[in-house]
Every structure is written in structure tokens, then in C-alpha cells.
Length: 72
Image (cartoon, rainbow, N blue to C red; front, side):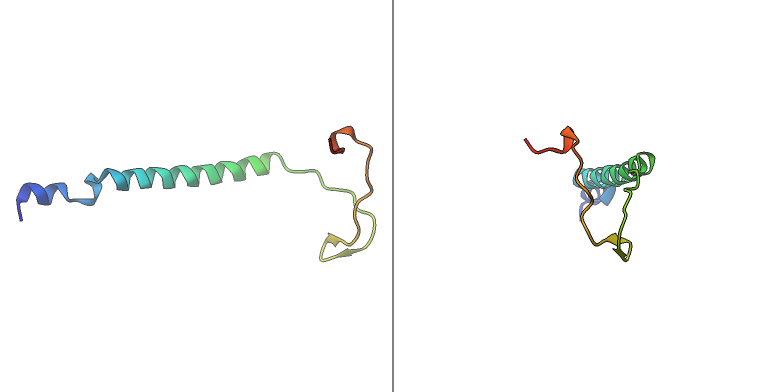
């Protein structure tokens, strides 16, 4: 085999592998960022009066007259 061809065939000289590695690292960073945002902006607990099974309410919560929740 030609020595110059052998040198260029190393894995770290393949741009497709670097692109794949970059996309993989970016997706992991995005996952970590979503977890951090979820921890910072936790949802307030919903007040539930009534029966529960495995910490899940068995009835729907009472409806509110909040205009933001009404369908358009």
C-alpha cells in the first residue's frame, strides 16, 4: 500500500466522523441543558383533594374559569 494513502486513511482524518462526533456532543449538551432548565423551572404541585392510586389522582381536577385555558 502507498504510504501517503495509509497516512490519510486514519480515522481522525475523516471529516464525516468529526461531523458525527460534533452532532453527538451537541445533542448530549442539549439534553443536559433541558435537564438544567427543568430543574430551574419546576412546575408547582397541583392541589389534589380526593382519592389517589400510586400517587395518581383517580378523578379530574376541578375546572377553572381561567381565560388562558379556554379553547379558541
